Length: 253
Length: 310
Image 1: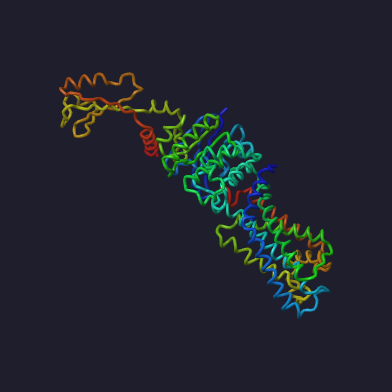
Image 2: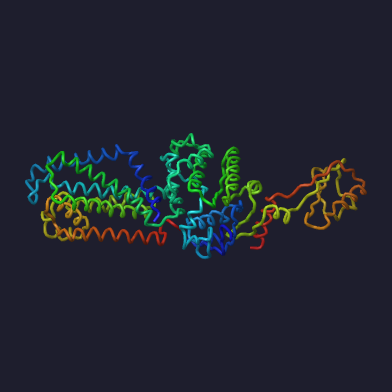
């Protein structure tokens, strides 16, 4: 294992993050505050409670998930797409490193950034609502796993993308709708039966539900199923990345 | 054992284009090899295949005894590459990109070494500058610094002096000479023949994916080198005198100069006889010059011969 290389990639990627620290920090704080004003104060005041939790608190796990998923994807996809775009990928390809080391470096950095933003949002939320976290360890585990698996997914998008439009395409057309329809702002049980059935085909439902369980002890789906879903998603992404590097798809001619 | 051993390497791209057609070449430790060829000859593809940027379709390559496919870690850790294109992250600082390169090749942090490299390349004062603030020549120096940062035993320079100013070219040659002294094996591609002539120990000529020739530079020049004798006359002539008609002379500069081509490798060059015959024909000599054919003439000769054969 070339640990030096993993470290080099990780440090290099994180330095990009620190260069834009203010931006990285301010934008999630502002957008979270806006969500609380709209959903928490304006609409939430007309909704009593969802499954025994005040609406303002109820949306916190979903809000965090929404940001963490999109941030993990965009950081990881940009991280690997940019070297392809400007040509510096030659150095990665000619270095004595294997696919696992490249992935650990890039995905590790992207996941770290997403985790940081997730924690910032959690902190901001605590300013607006009373938060109690029933299973803090499970909460952290879910958060870290989500950061990692979506960073892996983003990495795949970054390798697949042939231009900047394609880089935005999947997050915009697939991820955002899935997260919004994944019970981030409501409980699945509030939907008509047909839509409840459809929702269970949405992988994000399992993540949001599991994450919410770690906060309030209530969930739409059993916690074991949530863990299985995220583990399966992670493995699927890893398998795709393994195949990409084995065949050199879109990177090595 | 050769430092780099390329045997029968073919590279066909998905489009069907065959960039390398069974290229074989041994590169010795510590030498400077110039890989000479016109645009599209397969120079960059060959280098990319050795460095791991592309995979060979068939054939084998070893670097320091390590196969570039099955033992890529062993092979790649010996190799530094300075690409033809200026591929650098515009927002990054010079020192960070150089540090990154060293780490990527698994080498522990060594700021003293990086300082030495940056000073040698006149980049030390610019170490905290962003890449985008540098001139084109400076960016090229950064690429070299990145390649040297992990102390390679074999350095590939892909068209290092294409489009650079005279000063940088001279610096580059000096750096190459210094690296050779330190025992680094250097392979440079170029289509500037003067460059190969000036710094290479051996020259390989590649065209259309085939290595046409590999030879010591000096041997190459004597083996294929034709010489020309230029006889400057006191009074110009309109036509060759009868006695000299079958000597294959060429009249140049309005009859002022007679040119005689001969092969230095032959037993008898025929110069002495020719000069006697010239005076016997009543022509008065003013000056004599001989001129060695340049690599360029050899190169053009080889490539056009291949094209005739095709």
